[in-house]
Image (cartoon, one colour):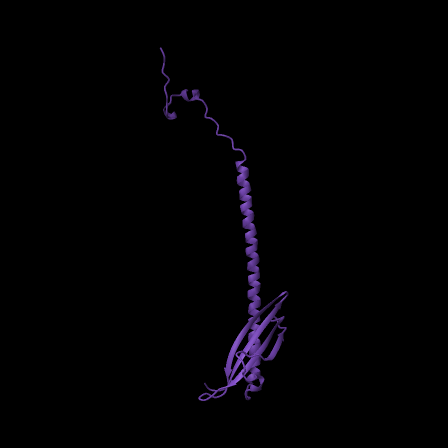
Length: 173
């Protein structure tokens, strides 16, 4: 008599000893250099990210330097304007209108005051002041002054500058 071989689809249902008779599973096909390609790809991507980070950090450093020197140039411009205003409007004295020439153009062209600073925070900075004046007409009286101050700071190969524009009057509007 022939015994028909029994097929057990689930190994848990197979009687003991039947599993030992089954053939081992076939090995998966071998990979030929797949891991090497993935490793090279990861190295290239990480290198690109590293170069990008170095550039971003360099730009951030230059931006910070620019902000600091810009603030110093603004402070130099403000300092120049304040010193000039004390000369234009001296305490307990008449306005010194002769410091500013008569207005003849849209922007004041005559430089009337310059200062260089050596104090901490303003070292290597200077300011220059240009101004003009205009006599107000009726119903107003007095003199209108337009003052433009430029502060600049030398930072090696770069020069940072800022302008402050002021208007002042000695009369009543």
